Amino acid sequence: MNIALLGYGKMGKEIEAIALKRGHTIVLKVDENNVNNISESDHQKADVAIEFSTPHTVIENIKKCFNAQLPVVVGTTGWYENFEEITKLCSEKNGSLFHATNFSMGVNLFFKVNSYLAEMMNKYEDYDVSMEEVHHIHKLDKPSGTAITLANQILVKLGRKNNWSINKTDKETLFIKDIREGEVPGTHIIKYHSEVDDIEIMHKAHNRKGFALGALVAAEFLHNKKGIYTMSDII
Image (cartoon, rainbow, N blue to C red; front, side, top):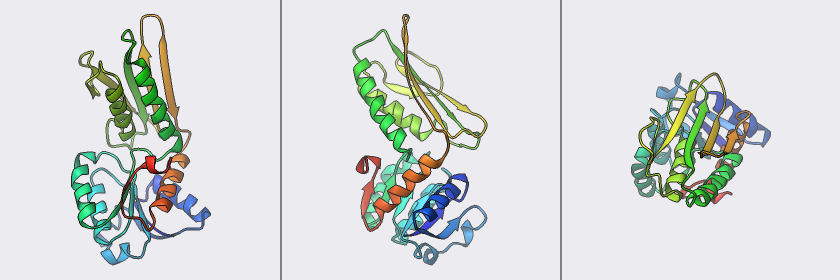
């Protein structure tokens, strides 16, 4: 496939390395230095785009892909308040969108474990639940998209929590402690605490390769498809 990379930071470079090993070609690299010089015809050189930019630029990038009839895989988070608008536009433009808060296969298995554990813990009211997420200092959105997905899964299954917050409020609120430090690729911990013991599950990424490979697998899946897809369509 011919791939456009919308966002050419550390993730973009990791995706490029894996894509080349899998026999693909990178025909477009867009970053802050050339974003204003990219035309619709540039997008049309690609078979699929992989978008890892910023929460401030992702919506415009998605729209440009729809206008160019270019399938787009979106790994940027912090834009989901615009999801209904993008869904409507995808339908109007007969576009192709693959979105995920996290493309790591391990994280998506972790999602399933988290949901199952929350369902089990629903009847054990002595346990309170909290979350901690750690990312590198360059990550702009707080909490992470992965943390929000985990939190929303818990809210669906655990009746004693009705919302989440990055600030400690009341016992009905799931507290998410967000930490930004160094260059760590990402850690998420769910803790159930009682007076007698703790139960924890954790996903800790060792590097960015898992995220990059998952995004590339998603791009290969999306090629020549129409509509909206997520990791559940692959796993």
